[in-house]
Image (cartoon, rainbow, N blue to C red):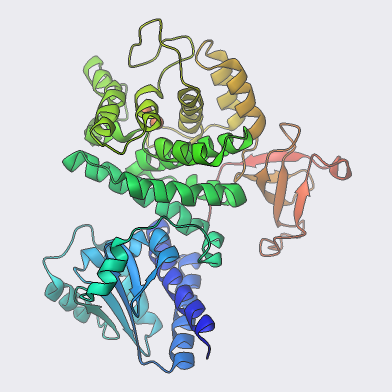
Length: 465
Ligand SMILES: [Fe+2]
Ligand SMILES: [Fe+2]
């Protein structure tokens, strides 16, 4: 077997491992998606063993990178944070899969992997836990000691999007990578006031690449109702929307990358606010409101304490609740002029908050959200708001719709008319699943050929339901 195909197989195995952990976290146990990818992982692992003749597969983890036979796996390392967090919880330096790994054993391993909320005491305890659950073919390795590999891992290069073509076909992993990055940044900011800005930039590069090609796929995932963590999901959604808007406005690459990072971290100041206030169901009293409003100042202060934070990072954290009429918070003197990025972030922030599910409210439709935003005179730059509505449309990319001829579809991009986007058909009139046949099933409702079809209904549902 040639090296290229064994590399591909290995890449597939690592990607599937990451995907299985991500899916297990997103969906309930035994969800069809979870089962499908666990089966696929088992098949790929078997294929790896039979084609390479190896009896074991050892995947090491060093300084947030996957290592295989002394090589750093760059692509999977960017999106595989969930898998790395699992290894951290299990206090190990890698995982060894021994041929053959049974399907049930694999299932039990993933169940344990996602149930751990904090690291076990040591690797001995972790090994015992696996043993008690009858897991014998998946072995926890000690910390990886190869110093040449450690040196390699320290040479941090941002992912360039070239080394793993399959990566961009996994919206779940991309979403999970974004979610993990923001979640870790908030955790680190809360505990030690520090944020890994370099990692945030690598993730922003990754997000930009993905949004260019598959914005609708990522937005399907960002509607997931992450009740416990909605500040994180909100940050990811706001960043995705802001970068998408920036792409449509023709902003250059460098600026989009900076914008992506700034947007992912815009609410970093909320990391210090207690969950009781942040997630309070009823109205806030004056003191609670004051504390919440402090998050802009706190966020800017956290970022100011980092030498590598850009002015844009700080501006975004400080100014994303400023209104076009000079009101909003934190209060500004009259001579301050607004930065365009705070203008677009403010729009994305409010739009996201209105159209997302929260523990205390249902989502409203984009149309209703626009109506509320337009009625709030002076809140937004009128031309910027009009542009935003034009590029996002009444049916934003990633939303599910039912067409007038009863086919169901997902929106892939806004059309020239607000209510006539381009859609990908998911189920045809006979209710047959067509979602795998991606090409050829795109219907552009703005095209004269489809003028007799319209959107009958917007389906506010979540992926996988
Ligand atoms: Fe905010
Ligand atoms: Fe926000």
